[in-house]
Image 1: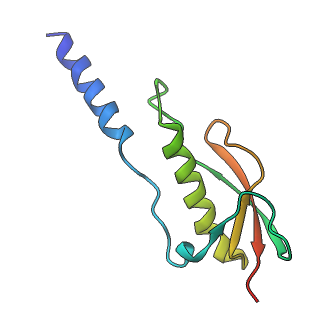
Image 2: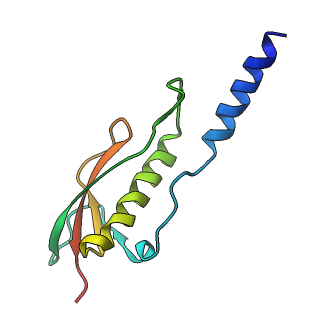
Length: 106
């Protein structure tokens, strides 16, 4: 009988690992992602974002999914500061990442 609660916990954790908790906001799909600072663009500021990189302090989430969610959050924030392009300022660390926000459109 003790293995039943453990099986339920394992199933719940594995089920949560497939979930995407961050959804694209209106207008964010038009924001481009550059791998480096774009040339000829005006810097609009920096965006700091974070997501959970662990579930229940035990299970580490998929690194690619965490990166995708961080990028989506940054794209969601960009239109609010008049930016149409973002570029990472470094790799994610513990579910946190910073992006530079740029206005590149004419």
